[in-house]
Every structure is written in C-alpha cells, then in structure tokens.
Amino acid sequence: MFLRGHSTVAEHVRTVLAAIRETDAELNAFVAVADNRALREAEAADRLIASLGEAAFHDKPLLGVTVSVKDLIQTQDLPTRRGSLLANHRAAVDAPVVARLRAAGAIVVGKTATSEYGWSASTVSRVGSPTRNPWAHNKSAGGSSGGSAAAVSAGLCTASVGTDGAGSVRIPAAFCGVVGFKPSFARIPYVPPCAERLAHVGPLARSVADIAGLMAVMSGADSRDPDSVIAPPVLTKQPAPLRIGWIEFPRTSGEVRRVTEDVLPALAAQGHRVDRIEVPFDDPYPALVDILAATEASGTTPEDEQSCDEGRLAVVRYGRSLSGAAVMHAEEARLALRTKLGAVMDRYDLLAMATVPTEPFAADAIGPSWAANPDDLLWLAWSPATYPFNITGQPALSLPVGITSAGLPVGLQLVGRVGDDDLVLSAAARLEADLGLALVPPGQETKGE
Image (cartoon, rainbow, N blue to C red; front, side, top):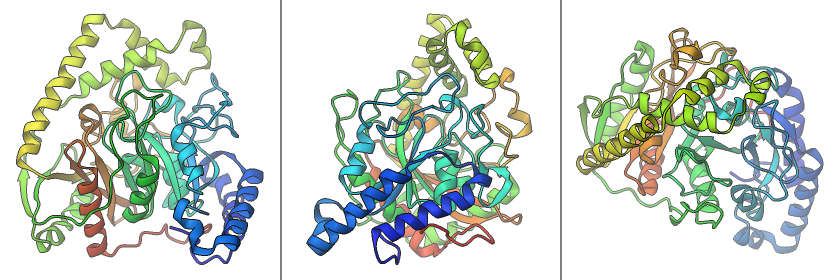
C-alpha cells in the first residue's frame, strides 16, 4: 500500500496530483483537490522518515498513503457539497474516519464525486458531469461512491473512503474492478449519523490487504455516533472448510453469471462446501424505498425543490406521501429480514453471489433502462444483491473476479454474519490470492501509483 516504488513521499504525491490533473477532466472522479495541503503533508512525512526510519511507520501505519474521501463525508480543509446545489459546507473538524486516516499518516488528496446526497447508485448530479468508468468512458462508474471507485481504479489514489446505504461502495467497486468493503453497521463511525441507519462508511482499494490495513485504522467507537461500539477487525488466518451459500439473483446477465461461476472451482479447491441455494428471503425493496424516501423527504423543504436533482425530487415527493404507519411497517419488515437472515447465517459461514447482476450501463443514466425512471421508484431495484445487507447491517465485500467479453469488470460479493468482518476479509484475501488477478483498465497504465 505504501510508496509503490517512489523514492520519497513528496515524489509519490506529486505524481498522484499530476495524474489527477492529466486524467480527471475526462473521468470526473474528483470534485476538489487538496494540492497544497497534500504536498505539505508529504514533505512532513519525508522529514519524519528521515528522522526515524522504519520506526516512523509504527505509530503511522499509513504514512504516505494517498487517499480520497467521498463528498458526503466532512473534511476540514475542503468543502462538502454532497453532490448538491443545496450544500457547500466547510466543517470545523474532520469526520472521525478522516481524522483517523490523517493521524495514521495518510494524505488526503481530494474529495470524490457522488450523486446528490448519495440518493442513486450512479454518480450523476447537477454539480458536474457524470463520473465515467475508467474501463469504458461511455459507461457508468456506479454509485453513489462512483468517484471513489473511479479514482482508485485509474490509479489517482491508493484508496478511497466511501459510504454505502444500499450498495454505494460495492456497486462502483464491481463496475470499476476494485475491492469495496461495507463493514458491519457502525464498525466505522458515521458522523453526523444517518437517521435511516442504513448507511455504512467503507473503504475502496485495489487489494484486500489494503482494505484490511485501512479498516484497522478507521474502525472503532466515537461518541458522536452512538451506534459505533464495535472493536476493529484483524485479518486473521481463515478457518477451513467454510460453508458457503451460493445465490443467483433475478435478472443476472449471462456474462456476469459466466464470470462469477468461474470462481466455483477455486472455492472447491480451497476445501469449502458450496451449496447453490434459492434467494433465502423475500425482496425487501418496498421497505427500503419507504425508509429511504421518508428520510430524503424529512431533510428537504419545498423551497429546496428548484435546486434538487429531478430524480431525487421524485423520491422526496413520494416520501412526503408516506404515513407514519407506512414507515413503521417498513421498519417491521427490516426486523423480519434481520431475523430471517440470522437463521440463514446459522447454516452458512458466508454467502456468495454476483455483486451486481448487470453490466455497467450508460454513464449519464441512473440505472438500466428498466429502472431509469425515478417516478417508478425502481431507482435501486436493479441491484437486489446489495441493499438487503444494508437492512441487516452485515459485512459485505465486492471482489473483482474477472471481466466480461466486452472487457468490463465483474465483482463477486461475499457476505458474513454481523461482526464477522475478519472472516469476510480473510476469505476474500485467500480467494484473491488464488485467482491471481491484476485488473487494470485497458490502455491506461496505473498513473499515480
């Protein structure tokens, strides 16, 4: 994860910043770049290394690592616009996750693009042009952490911090060919907390080992997030064999099915028992829609409407139509799903499935054609393998496992029991090592790293 062959941190950071200037006008992954502070911190890191040598990394395990931060997360030095014309906030202090990364020596090079308040699983907003997929610039990078995934995939930073309320870390990770991890709910504090209690903070990087290194720094309780009480995970030796439930969700394309099923021999060779199972729960999408729409409506006034993204506005208006009883019914469905999946996880150590059943769609779309009209309230329905695990709070990781015939990445999702983050990371690391893939966008050398 560290200097990637550069002789000094300052040289490394200058290379990254130059790559952003050269590449990002086309990708639109960044909404702000911290040139001056990043260079000052790089020079300070070099002085520390010159003074202490390898000991400098003992207290600062991420010293010199370049990271970006999704523009839903507060940063002191850069504005937080949340992908919206309604917001332009400069926080007095960093969010806990950013403060922890800086304390560990990481260098924040910029803020990455998101849809407005993260409402959709694509990265399209009125703030700027759509974020484009480094593998095919006419395709979506996914969302709403699409800027983060595109930046990591294109080599414009070593890692990024995203948020995931229905798949917003894992979907873009799958589309862009990087690793994206949604840890157990509140393992990383989210400040200010999200009232709907679906959103997780999670890292994106090019390897599971990098994800584990980030998690060790980012995790742990913070009093500003009352849910954040779980201890940091450790990448431990994986017990084997594991019991794995293999699920295929509706509308899975033939190409996605082919690429993910190519992983089955590797799992069998590791000694795991893999059972093909039907989707073991009813689709919780109606409950998800009501919870999310009610939350969007509660934070948007009628006066805000002229500045809202048109798609998000359809969701807001639906949220205003919901009764308290309807929202409570959705909460009851949440509890029922948690109970149902708890019983499923009594039988399996992990669940495995394609992260997203479809290939990347057009860069300026919010989803496949059948889910592209927000008025139909299907704006997230095309990713049925991601949002259930926000409702349950389980850890879930998207691992790149191959490419389609059209040359686009495909992700496999591994899901564990609540609190079993270390098992998910360990299983993913072993699978990653056995597959031996190194996915780099075609025709594009890793620019910054």
